[in-house]
Length: 277
Length: 277
Image (tube, rainbow over all chains, first blue to last red; front, side):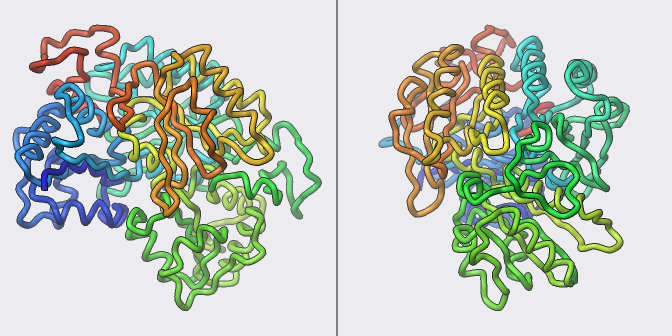
């Protein structure tokens, strides 16, 4: 059946992939993807054709996957993390839009979500994204630097926890230092920061540090940098960002726990029903 | 073994849960969670004790789970979505911090990430989160409304795609209208918006609409509302947010595809190596 499925693999270990993603890969006629991602799923590949060699360009991979699906094959295009976050889904849908795709002619398009890097990396260092957060890519290949810079100012000023994707590359070392300088205009130097390399892969490396010091560490494009908000704190190997600002604004709900020092994000009967978990 | 594992179930269907999450639930002595979430995993529950009845308060559930783990049991506390995004991980880690937890005494703490609602909902409507995005909860139970309002202004002005969690509840109907008014100061009324109820559950309902009109729809606390950025467009049943601003700023990399009208987020050899997928 002519079908193109965009699959988010999650961070990379097979046991953090969903069953649905796993099954789609097993059932495919063709598996397409960047070589490093196809390597992650080698044990699921048997009879499927694989499109990876020489396919170093994202746009070419998208076009090749679309072409195979149009030819009537069941194609899976794999991405690390989530398929829709800085990944192949937007590229493929842009391409199909240009080609005047319609549902009758097909191919059918399906998107299987995955655990994005922000969530995977956060889980290794506690709960740094417990409250409102954003992701910002520091790659200026497709986005002008002034746009990125404006986003960093906005996120810092409005107290979002922030996950930086593509924090550094060989050609682009200064952007993360610029981001640090901007953040220090709004947040304390001691604000907790996590630098997570290759989460849930063999070469995983996790470092907890501070906003003042994190740029001293060695990391590259496979890392994510997570910056806490003004309420985040470090305890042992965790960064914790509370679910709200009850402590800061001293809201009083009349409930305390023994030994409670800072106000807690205590949930009342009402809040439990309102808060999504 | 005394262990407390925080498990993100993903959106709710069993096949979008990771194998690691599934195995942790099967191996547990005790499964704790909000009743609606425990219901989602009934078929994985056999001999495990279940803590859910009467446990309508998040904080009580966290405390009960910690207590059981301290008593030497292998406890799993389940959350929908990701365990660290507006979920139980920040509550539990705050509680353990207050209690002076240390690694030697235990219990051991493990966090298994999951697919958060923003990514799950986005996958049902194309790729609305293809570029920088943020999540904002509209619940003002733990966060003062002026803080939330400032975040909406910041995210709108800096052109983040936005996913609103807890967009409405019985007691709180006006916040989403306020958010809409703020967004209309920065974005076109025709900006694509998706309202996704109960993604990947039996009562799933998906609507594509616009910034001007989405508040006319009926939705509640189980919905997520996704607002595109200034480059997002609707095509058939998709919202697509391009991976960058190449079209807008007319950056020229000398590469075009046949039939290309708007500039594409074309990846060059270099960009492919830099962009995380």
